Image (tube, rainbow over all chains, first blue to last red; front, top):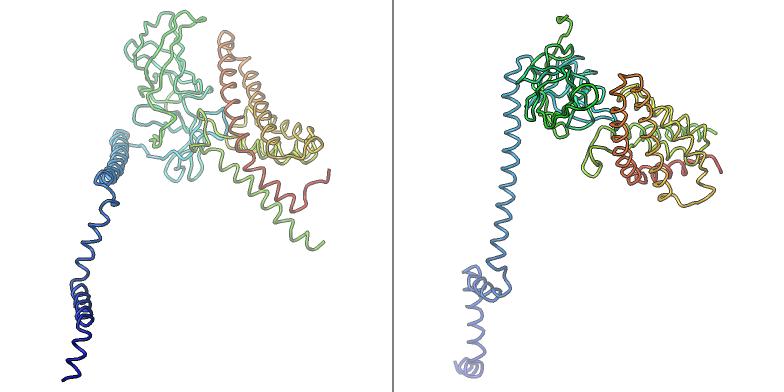
Length: 249
Length: 184
């Protein structure tokens, strides 16, 4: 007893502190470091990312999601437009554009479907908006399309409003030149252009584009510049309709 | 002797693969690979890479072969054989190795000049086709062809010369390692 009392009086402080430390540590352990984390947060607050940066982070996330939604919406819109368009073309086959001309002179596109999907040479290629061109070559799984914008493309067309006839010839861009057969075609800027019944390679009445400028004084025949209604440089999906010109004489 | 027999198919297999790769790149219009709707003329770059350290006749034949291949992808008339064959011949005639050992920049310059030349030859062919077309229209058509020629040759020359080292460097290295380049 005496021994214990003497030890206590000598090491009282030490023992109490040790006990306190052990109990404190135990408490912290039992509470899963409750105080530690609270303290850590309180101490690190000056260095923590401010609310503003957090907001910015959230904003960025929202922006990312919005962009995704927008992208999906526009894709969906494109496909729906194509689907609605496809319904108006009972014999049409939808095909993706997988490539462009292999040199810098021909205005061609390469489609990702061919003979096995029912495509054949002479097929009419359209997209939502109007006429694009004509299939000139097919393999089992691809098709080459000569576009209206090619310089060798010459298509008989008519001005829908007045019925005046002419033909268009490509210039390598989304604008094609139209030549009239009449001396005075009475054409105005904004007139709509579609294929004429005299065209042998295309069915009549397919929309082609819109007149953007008229030049009546040029050379022998009056001319106009027609903007194609399909954006040729960015078109990604087209519809191919078989066209048999043997039935037309 | 036996070793070279085993190695020859590999050497030319890789060469052939590079041509096929160029052909596959032609219809692509990727961002960075496109300027005003025009991509690099990969076949022209290939012909220059092939001809620059070879004889004029070898260069000419490579142009003929690749020109026929490009015709197959577009249309046989006007032909690409003429332009590419001339490019191959002239590139070899330059005898670049006698003037400079430096490779990448001089190759880019040669490709630039040859791209302009090639597009000009095609434009001439188109013009000749149009001359026997209806006369009042011919003048206007010629004008359109040459405006197009300016746009196309500039865009094609810039892009082809920028991308030329990407094709020339590995190909040249391969041919050097394989020892198939004729000694100067």
